[in-house]
Length: 429
Image (cartoon, rainbow, N blue to C red; front, side, top):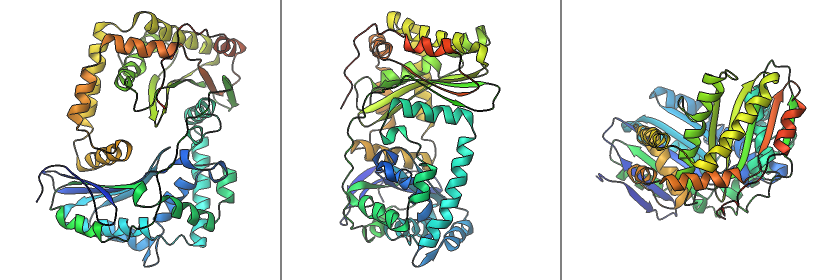
C-alpha cells in the first residue's frame, strides 16, 4: 500500500491524485474543469444545473437509492459549482469507499438527465435564485462582479438567471454535459485511510472515455462602468468596492493574499480597526481576493447607514492610497504572515479538506504542491512585494456596487473622481 502522495494517469485517461492518511475516513472527489466562466451567455447556470441533475440518478440508479446508500453508512455526499470548476464528492468510512466511488463514477459518466428531472429541478433552482437575491450583501457582491467582469462568465452568478434557467432544455443540458465532462477536463482525488490500490483499479475500469478538451479562457475585458446600484427596502446600504487584480499564476499572488489580510482580513486589520473600532461606521467590514486563470479581483464589503456611506468609502480609499505610498508596517506583515500560515496548515486537517486541496492543485496547476511549500512561499514575501502589489491596486480604478436605500450622490462622485497615481503592474495572461 502506498504511503505517500501519488499523481498518475490511468489507462482510461483519468488524472488521479491519491493521498494516504492515517485516519478512519476517506474522501473522494471528481472535479470537472468547467464552471460559470465557461458557459455561453444563453446557457448561464448550466454548470450549476448539471450539479443538481447528476444527483437525480442514472438509468440504473434513482435519486432516492443514492441517498439511501450513503445514509446507510453514515456518509456525506454533495457537490458545488464555482466560476471555474464543478465538484462532486463524498466522505465516509474507508471500508465503504468502493460504494462511494462507484456511485460518483456512475453519475459523472452516465447520468440520466431525464426531461422530467430537468423540469423539477428548474423549480428548485428558481427558489435558490430567489433566496440568494433576498440577501443584500450577496446581491452587492454579485453586482460588484458584474461591474468588474462585464460580458464575462466571471461576472455572472453561478446560479444563472431566471431567464436562462427557465429556457434551458434537457437536450441543452445533455449537450453541455457531453461537451465538458471527459477525461481531459477532469481530475479525481482520493484522500484518507484504507488501501487506495483497489480504488485506483476501480477508477481505471470506469467508462470515462468521452472527449472533452479543457476550456479556452480569454482575458475578460476591462470594466466599462464604475458605479451600480440596486434598491432594496433595507435599513443599511450594503457596499462592495472592487478592483480588478492579478490571477493565480502571478508572481505576486502571495503578496496579494497578505495584502488582503492586513487591509481587511482580520480583527487587527486596518479597515476593521478604523471603520469599526475607531469610527463605529459598520458592524463588520472585510477585504477579500478572488483569483482565476489570468484574472482576479480584490473587494471590500461593508454595510452601513446611508449617512455614513461617504465617510466609509473615503476611509477605504485612503487606506488603499496609504498602503501604496508607504507599504505595510513590519508588524502588520508579520501578523498577516502568521495568520495565513496557520490558515493554510489548519485547512488540511481532515480527509475532506486534503482531498479538495489535492484536487484543486492538480486541476489548476497540473501538479500538487505541498502545503509546506505554499507556506514557505508566503513566509518569503518581502515588504517590497506587498508594496508593489499595493501600488498596482491603487493605480486601478475602483468600482462600487450598492444595494439598499438610495446611494448618496457624493459617494458616486468620489468613486468617479478617484485618481490614478501609479502605473499598474502587468498582470498575467
